[in-house]
Image 1: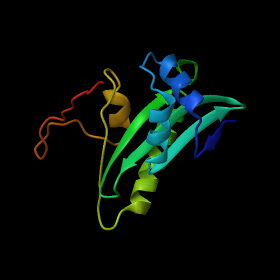
Image 2 (image 1 turned 120 degrees about the vertical axis):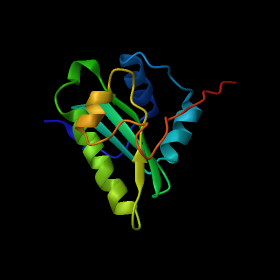
Image 3 (image 1 turned 45 degrees about the horizontal axis):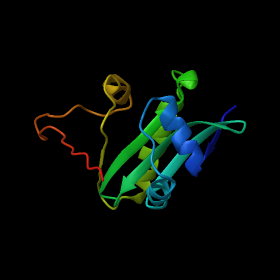
Image 4 (image 1 turned 180 degrees about the vertical axis):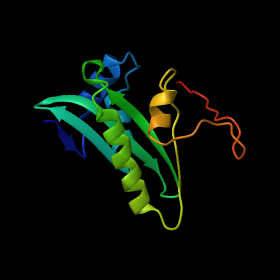
Length: 135
């Protein structure tokens, strides 16, 4: 049985990112990311971190980010469980209503649709947009 926790180490963040071929971050930046999160969920198989997800925002406009499940543990419901937990936390933090958004990794859109998210653009929202900055 997996253990769900509300923290994660800097090392585990970068190990998970490497497992799905995402770029890693410097320790200082990860520390800031974790400190400024509204919520962190990590999943451990004994002492091995196998998944993580974070909620960032202000309780009205929130974003789910860094949803990573190690490839050896995908398709077991872990990602869905983390999303569900983060949505419950967002619900508990909101006043009267909130918007929870995310940017799906390419090819993962159907996973998030199965979690209740809707693709944009739609009748209300235009396309999501982003810009990457590097130093």
